[in-house]
Amino acid sequence: MKVTLSVLKADVGSIGGHIKPSRALLDEVKRFVKEAGKNLLIDFYIGSTGDDVAILATHERGVNDEKVHKMAWDAFLAGTAVAKKQGLYGAGQDLLKDSFSGNIKGMGPAVAEMEFEERPNEPFVFFAADKTDPGAYNLPFYLAFADAMFCSGLILSPKMGKGFTFRIIDVAHTEKDRIIDLNTPEEIYDIATLLRDNERYVIESIFSRSTGGQAASVSTTRLHNIAGKYTGKDDPVALVRVQGEFPATGEVLAPFEVGPYVAGFMRGSHNGPLMPCPLNATISYFDGPPVVTGAAFCVHEGKLTEPADVFDHPFWEYVRAKISEKAAAIRRQGFSGPAMLPYSELEYGGVVEKLAALDKKFKLRD
Ligand code: 13P
Ligand code: 13P
Ligand code: MG
Ligand code: MG
Image (cartoon, protein in one colour):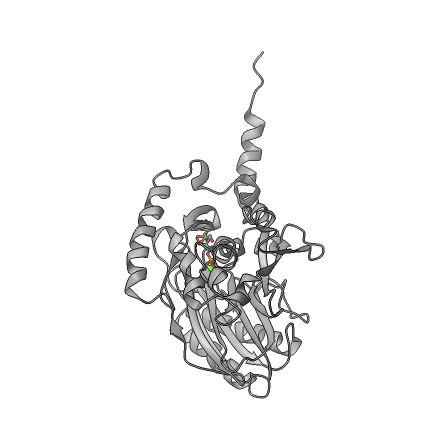
C-alpha cells in the first residue's frame, strides 16, 4: 500500500526557559491527536526534543494534506492553551500566523513528509534537532549518502552504487521554492559546493537512482524568513528510509559521530557542535548544545512499531563526551569571530539597532 509519513513539529512552550515541554502539554497534544486523528490517521507517535514537540503521523492522504496539517495546527493550539495556563515560557512560540490557511508550511511549525509504496519491511529513522537550523543535516546526510568513507554500502551494494539524487533548496529565496537536483557520484563537488553554506542551501530530499524511491525528507523552514525577526530557532526534523536500496541505519547514524559545528545554540546566534542524544533529550549548557535525537521505526500497513532510540547506546556516551569538549572549546571565545554567527544571520535580532546607533558615533579622521 501507499503510505504517507508526516512529521509536524513546533515549540509551543517550555519549562524553565527553552528547556523542555511540560508533561501536561505533551499529554494534551497526544489527547488531541488521538481524538482529532480518528478518521484521518492510521497511527501516530508524539515525541519531544529539547523544547520542541513533534507529531509523527501515518496516513493515506499524501503529502501537504490540508486536513492532516490543520489537525496538527489545532493540536499545537491546544498545547499552547495548556502552556499559557501553566505559565510556560514562549507559549505558542512557533505559531507565527493568526489562523490556519491550508498548509502548515510557512506558518511556523516544521514539516517533513514522504509518500511511498511500503516495502514488505519498511524501516526508517525520524530525526529531530533543537537549537539549530535545517542546514544542520547537510553534512551528516551528505556523508551518509555520498561518501564511501562513511557509507560502505556505496561500495558493497550494487543498488546503492548507482548513487542518489540530492534535491537542494535555496532557503534565502522566499517568493517561490528555488530548487536544484544534483546526482551522485558525478556531481558530488557541486553538491558539496552548495552544502558548505548551511544557512542558504539545504538538503530538502534525497532519492535512490536505482529505484527512484525517496530516501529522505528534511524540513526547510527558516523562521526568520516568516517572522522577519528572531522568534526562535528553526529546529529541523527529518525522515530517512533505511536498508535495501538505501543506506543501513548505522550508515546514516555514523556521520553524527563528527558532531559538526552548526548554527544555533544560545539565542540562535552562535555556532555549536551537534550532539546526538537519547529521545526526549533536554537542553542545558548555553541553551544547548544543539541536539539531535533519532527514533527508528518499522511501519507496516501504516502501523508503527514502538521507537528504537538510536542514540541511546554506550558508544554515543563517548561521542557526547568528545562533543562536549568541542562545545566548551568554542564557547571559551565568547562572542568572538566564528563563535557567533555572521551579521547576515544576526540581522533578525537586536544587534541591528545597536550597530545603527554606534554607526552614527563614528568619526572620519582628518
Ligand atoms: P528555541 O528555538 O528552541 O525556542 O530556542 C530559542 C533560543 O533562543 C534559545 O536560546
Ligand atoms: P527573553 O529576552 O524573553 O529573556 O528571551 C531571550 C531568549 O530566550 C531568546 O530566544
Ligand atoms: Mg523555545
Ligand atoms: Mg526549540
